[in-house]
Image (cartoon, rainbow, N blue to C red):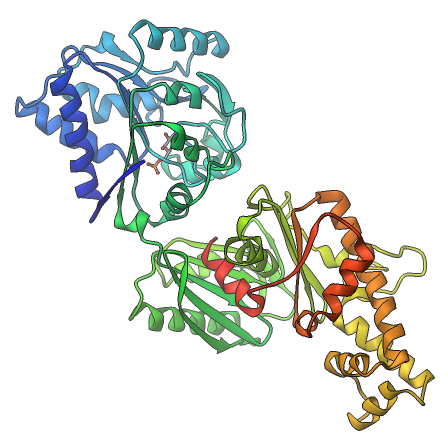
Length: 533
Ligand code: GLP
């Protein structure tokens, strides 16, 4: 894949138009594959200008558009038929009979797809295909992970595409739920391909395209098998500079990444009193950072539940707070928000132990048990943004009560809080133990560090507590392994950093081909992952 990096959208449009014009000049009866969306509008404007100036002639050009919503009336101003008329066809000397767009009014969509594919073949295939790229990496309407090696077909649009394309409609509900689209197989048969990417919201997929492998969850990466693809992108789409924000119970961490490398870190205290003031404090830090690093997108990890963008977090001033919208009141950049544990998992997946894996589960052992699940390279959200692995139930009858309302939740047994609780219970029952001495010296309380101190000095009481803790930890890990079959389970949190005591015990107890590893990024994982949202 060849890359043409442009300063801005205007330059991108000129460069791409020049390539299309060369094709038209060299082969005046070329078959062009055309795309819609915001990005190609500038190319069409340039082509119209060149046509008016007599530099290029469309009279023998044949066109096939990539896709069309289904169902949609051709005269609907959001149809791609309408788009092509307005942006190109009625402004150049093209013969309308030579233009083809899948018919959103077709009574039988399947038959329409077969006819469309045959028509392309009749003209000898596409000489030059222009492509845009969706934020989720789709090309045409070939959505992630749906039968990728297909010809023209009817497809369901994903939620993210419906949301992304809602900007052109009055209301999200008006966006058709299906589309007719050339398949990846159709696209790959084109002789040449120009792929366009403009704007910071495309930088994630561009980075995947340039740095990652072929990956069905980012359909555009399939273009890597084509011998003649030119990616034309502007600096916003290319620039890897982004800001990650990890909101925690005591501090908010900020991380700036350039081309996927950490270049700056800072933090501010968490404000638990007022949502409004807290958001402003975060915004002030964002602006301070912006003075030195011109990031183009912001990702935020926050504790709590997120449903339809609304965040509710027990220890923070967020109650049904649309955090992205609150931040966007002050910062005009794309802002993505996700759960903090999901961000940590994403950070570890992109930059840490999970770097060369597809499926990981990150388990954070602390006050509670948190974690994130990445399957096929993507955060597992489910419909209700759950993934609260600390609340899988490991003992139903007689289980310990959990503040979440359930009983027997895993975090009541496998968190550091649980380890300390059991340690204190055991040392009070074994007053001749080293653990009890440490407890007394520490003003009648234990912490994780003291339990590990006692373990290292062969305290039997500490060992018993630790062994039981490992049993509980392993029960939950086994459940996760059985459900998800990940490449690796990655453990994070202070207690994983005490030599290899914990990881050795877990590995021994689990006996699984799944890799059990300690997080490489630990406290930085959240902010780094947030930057990758
Ligand atoms: C739609 C089209 C795609 C296009 C994508 C991106 O989903 N079906 O062909 O690439 O939008 O559009 P934009 O260029 O507006 O970001």
